[in-house]
Amino acid sequence: MNLLKKAGAILLAACTAASMSSCGENTATAMTVTDFDVRAGIYLYYATSAYSEAVETIRKGGNAFENAETSNDYKKVLDESNIDGITAEEWIQNKAEEFCKTFVAIEKEFEALGLTLTGEQLAAADANAASSMSYYGEYFTKTGI
Image 1 (cartoon, rainbow, N blue to C red):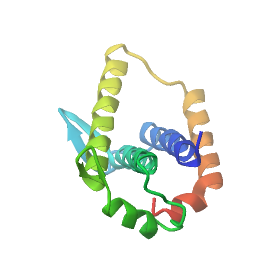
Image 2: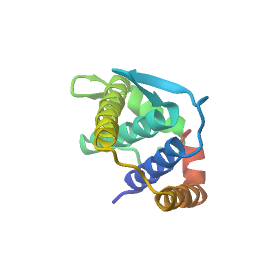
Image 3: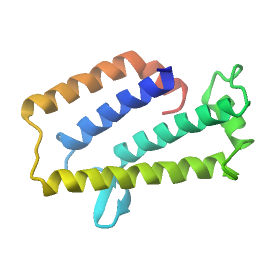
């Protein structure tokens, strides 16, 4: 599994933990899907996942990122690329929205089934998030996350 996918998975764990634990009522809403508010942290995770997927798709298409070291370097390649006939930026936004819609469907089903996370599960998610930030914090900063 490449670094971007690992970082994305870890960021999801961090965002999920943050969204389910004491974030409070003042957490920013990034978008609304039907009647469900998607918090900014969740949206950012999915945007990051879409970004990683776009980079992999472009890389497989022959565009190289070997010389990309900063978020500006990656942005330049993405700005010059198309995926599925649309700009990479639009593709990333569409993919992040699609991911959010799937997230909302899962959240609604979780609620409909009356499921909850235990305190132990929430504590484990918080510990994973802290560990991820200590391990990937430099990467997140370097890439503008």
